[in-house]
Image (spheres, rainbow, N blue to C red):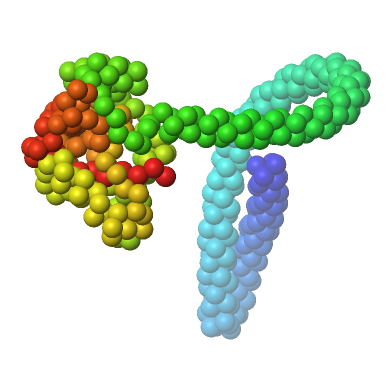
Length: 371
């Protein structure tokens, strides 16, 4: 459109220049006529002067000739001026004509390009229209499917509402069932606690507190019955399932075994003594109310062997590391059968038990009491 407007403007300018050229030509022709008429007038005038009196010559020489010279110069200047203007206009005309031709060529090119683009747009429009029609058909099918899905969803929503009501009822039943289960669990826990307490009492009753006479066969039978670990008599023994708890009473550390109901000294005597001195050590504990109790005693062989563990710790002792390691040999209250001058000693450093004479410094003391 801009090229068309520009071309139209150039056409108008070209037409204007043509009209100006025509006007200039007409003026030039008029000047030529005037010039010719003046020449004729001058010729007539010269003849008249020649034929007239010498006064006429004087007039011609003083007045007519300068006037003619002036008019001649003026005419020549006007002619030169108009010729220059005419040349400029013709040059401008040629330039405008060339520009018009270029614009016309460009216009034709653009018209061709426009036709191509128009054809492309038409093809795209046809393609888009066919695509639109196809999409319209798809949308219709999709709408039918959506309507069908809505119907299905409504049916499923009704089913869900029914299921929700059933779920609510099931939840209520579940809560009631859970309450019953919790009640049963509570009863089971109470019974388990009761069973554990009874089991502990049974075990505690099995662990006698009084001393007795034991033969080697009795010792071996006890070790095998309770699966105590003994490096010589029961090397595959798993040991007793103790439940140790450390407690501090009057600045003294004690160990409580919940499995047997026994309270042990964490340590004991600082050195090995005779059996008699071991009894004296116990009497001193009870006299001074050690940790607030006066019923401390020497442990039986069964009680002492319950501390024996099948795994050796770093210091070489077969006892839980909750206990001190200074008491490696420990006196028991049990006497060797048919040998009243001998008593049973537990050797934690070696992982076994032996009989020793009461007069030898064979063991240290680790006192015990029943809870």
